[in-house]
Image 1 (tube, one colour):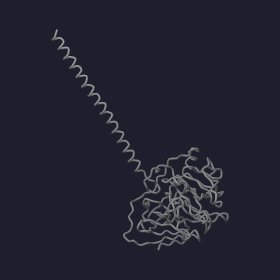
Image 2 (image 1 turned 120 degrees about the horizontal axis):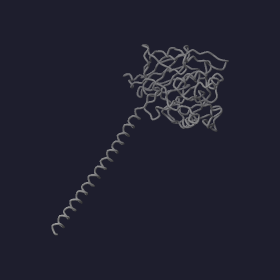
Image 3 (image 1 turned 30 degrees about the vertical axis):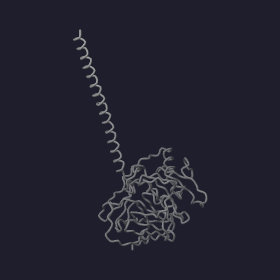
Image 4 (image 1 turned 60 degrees about the horizontal axis):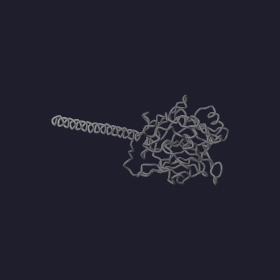
Length: 348
């Protein structure tokens, strides 16, 4: 009887020990599986984070979270009364050209990376800016426009937002500023309206090529002068310490009202394009076809050409060097100054 009790005790003990060891092993196994899953998720997050940081603006070449977002092109005033402009130093790329013969210039700022809370003063559309907006796959924001431009826009040539009908309160006027210079918007407002209108928000623009900065060994300071008339005259003072071009208009520093900083471009293009007057109050600038161009990058001037397919307004505006190779910009803001072939330009 005692032997049976002892044997039963031993069997219970062995069974309990086995069960205990099994539970410990199972717990350890579950912990290891859970740990592996955490590690895997961490690795996926690290890969995703790394990939996101590799996205670069197709215009400026700078890494940014919005790099794959469709560009937003906004028409801005060139008038003295509208200065300083809000957000002008936050754009990836800016086009400037005369909108009346030998006089007023207007700007189109194109945004990818930044989300300015205020952009303005917003002004009217011009028909010769439309192929440029199409060429970078932008949504085009403007305050009314010439009948040449509005005819094209009403025909649906590109996705646009006009302040006159003002869809979904995209635009607003600020008190204390004289009309017509008191019209403003923001990236947030533009994107909200574009979404409501079912506009595509992802970019299809192939982008411009970029290369690492290589400033010259010489620390020579030079100035690029584009002699638009009077208060519209533009100067870029090259600063070898930052390898950038500080912008002035009418002899006064071009300041961004949002940041209170002087506009500082990394690349400046002077694009030569034939112009002719229209109806005595508008300009017709030939931004399709091809022509001569000068490139100011890394403190040096290079001659080349520009080209845009006349048969396809959505075609990219391409810049080529003397060997017909595409110009490589350094990462940073690009300014494209469109000037008549007879316009005086100095680099000294």
